[in-house]
Length: 542
Ligand code: AMP
Image (cartoon, rainbow, N blue to C red):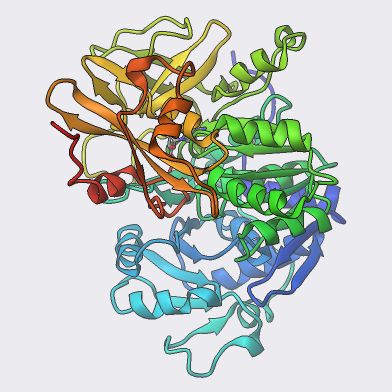
């Protein structure tokens, strides 16, 4: 016997219609490419998303055709999120930090038909347009009068000219909720990038889960700043979750430096911000230097790579901002775990709470996790045993778009490529990416643990630990360190700093001071590149 409830498909268009009706006055504030601040309401987002939908229908696009963006976080990008997916086409967010040849490769692979771009990226468009063979229309995300006559892009039109003649009414189609809604390519540190294809259903379920109190705790009382780019896993789903709750949205545009972000947080009374650790590193440095304080920021979700304890302490203890350490992947939409405390932790000392907060957190309802040994046997949840982390759930990938190899799943579970422990309370802690784990004398050393200690030193701005081949131990860790401007620390002082904080055999064998550590398109340290830079490094006597 079937239940007798309405079988209404979960559609992304319903989010913006909901926001229009229930939070019509809710504000969307964006720093534009031109530098000025633009503000309007959910009612206007919805009206313009409908105009965009009408405009897309004039471009001769089929259902599921890919519509690409090369854009910062801003209001027009938000309209594309709802307008493109709402009509049944697939929003493909391209990462502008990649090389133009790689962007062209990705656009061809995805068979993008239209590309909407911020004027900042005109040089990329010029460099890639001869190579991107499927794109039929280029649209510049700017006012009609800002479009240069000699753009060098044939047939280029402005977004405003495209949507201006269109009606602000539109009848959003209803279709199978498992239809593709958006796509994002993985960072792909090795081999070709791989395409993850989200569906309307996975997106809405992920947004529901993201809003929950023990996840991102989003509400109509929030003012949300996604520093995480809208081209990186849909800005962690925040645009959808914000429309679902009516939260105010604040977009930083191209100004991602610490000063600009801090100023936006203050001027727009931001209560909740989201970003990778490297972004917050810059902002905290700016605040320290100027003796600045937050007046409204209550919590920040930090993920994408391990959040160093020093950062959690700085936010919590110095600024009274709760850090939600989160873990996820492009293949997981991206939210997998978020670290929030349980009742039993509340009476604990600050130090004990910190041990919990450092973990990547508990699985959200909807994400099943397990850790396994090399033979695939499940390992215990004891907080000590570590193994390969596998996940499954309705917003976890089942296969890549146009896969090069076989399906990624193992008995229905997606292998994340991360190595982790899970404790009795379900808190997962990443030890490493499986390829970054350092194998020393048959024992594993977590590069994240080694890095976290280094960045807790007051003179260290950034640190990356890699394994170097060693004749006796197979591999031994060394730590590459970027010093804070004007700060000094010697190799010996830094190695001494490890005493008592980690087992002796896990202490790195050497410190290499470097000017920078290569960062990838989404702000993560690129250890493969660092290994390449340090390829001639040899242990003395080895
Ligand atoms: P991406 O798909 O580019 O977002 O990368 C996903 C990978 O980033 C994960 O598999 C992890 O290796 C890493 N990652 C994400 N969040 C965290 C975190 N909080 N701590 C450690 N690693 C993380």
